[in-house]
Image 1 (spheres, rainbow, N blue to C red):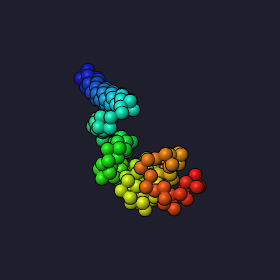
Image 2 (image 1 turned 180 degrees about the horizontal axis):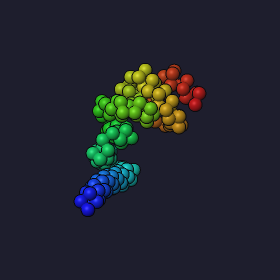
Image 3 (image 1 turned 30 degrees about the vertical axis):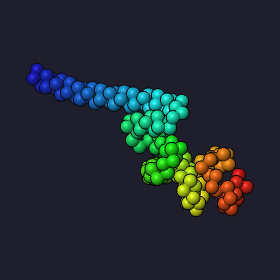
Image 4 (image 1 turned 45 degrees about the vertical axis):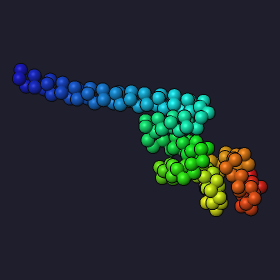
Amino acid sequence: MGSITQEYEQRLQVLESKLKERSEEILNSHKKITITNEVHSLWMRANLESDMNSKIEIYDEILKRKPEDVEAIAYKADALLELGQTGVAIQLCNQALDMDNDYGYAYWQRACAYAMLHQHADAMADIRMALEYAPNLKNELLHEAAFASLHDNASFNELIAHS
C-alpha cells in the first residue's frame, strides 16, 4: 500500500509541476497579448495625432512597452526631424539600424537628417540603402521635403531618372 501511495504522490507532483509550468505560460502569453493590444492602440493614437511633441510622447510609450521596436524608434526620429532635432534623430536611426540593419525606413530617416545638414554624400548613401531594403520608397524621392537640398545633386538626379 505504501509503494502505491508513493507512486501516486510522485505522479501528482509531476502533474502539479506541469500544471504550474502551463499556468506560467498562459500568464506570459496573456501579458504579451495585453502589451500587443496596448501598443496597437498607441500606434492608432499616433496616426491620428498631428502635434509632433504628442507623437513623440506616444512613441515613447510604445518604447516603454517594447524597447526594441525599431519602427517606433524610426518614427520617433521622423517626428524629431519635423522639430528640427537632426542630431537626436540620427542617433535614433543609428540605434534602430543597430537592432535591424535591414530596416529601410531607418536609412530613409537618417538620409533625411543628413540632407537637412547638407551632408549630401552620407544622405545619398543612406537613400541607396533605404531603396535597397524598401523599394517602395522610390515613389517618395521627389516628395520628401528633407531632400530639397539634394535637388541640384547629380547623384540624386541620376537616381530620380532611374526611378
